[in-house]
Length: 198
Image (cartoon, rainbow, N blue to C red; front, side, top):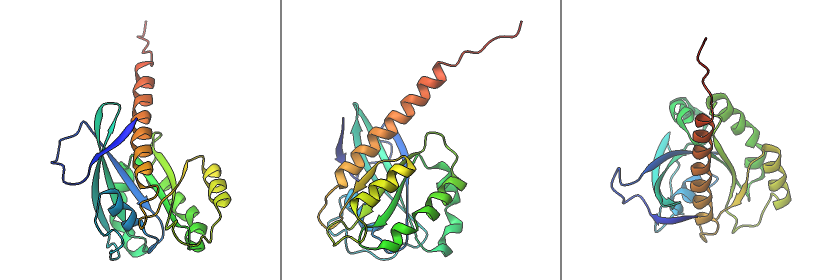
């Protein structure tokens, strides 16, 4: 079970594990507001456009361990993408985000999926499809979103920075899946048999 402990006031190194989470999606869909809500901002809706990259931290407790989720907020504009290649490569998880009130952001998801796949080849990469602004009238139906997530083979989560709906669940699921992905890799590594030459 994962539970929220605290946010970015935690001193560096006060956790057992640290994971890099990348958020991708069109500009203006509410990525920054969601991350601010995840990290306890009092006014998550009062944001400006992200220029390049910005990092926020949230601490979760998962199976008795303190886990730092290093949440990287990326700019949606193409002109800022040249500087984020290294974050793509080291990401442990990615949130493909779209605005439920903006159909074009949903239709562009394939571009973001392709970009991540070009830049991150990790077998253990944890992926989620996350909708934002679920307090507004949807232009994308829930069945459409779930179908897209099923095509990608990933979970679908709904969030709202305005109401806080889905924020804690998203972080909890991230922590649990990241913890599980690492555990599986360790199990696979320990089960490999090395045969000495005769």
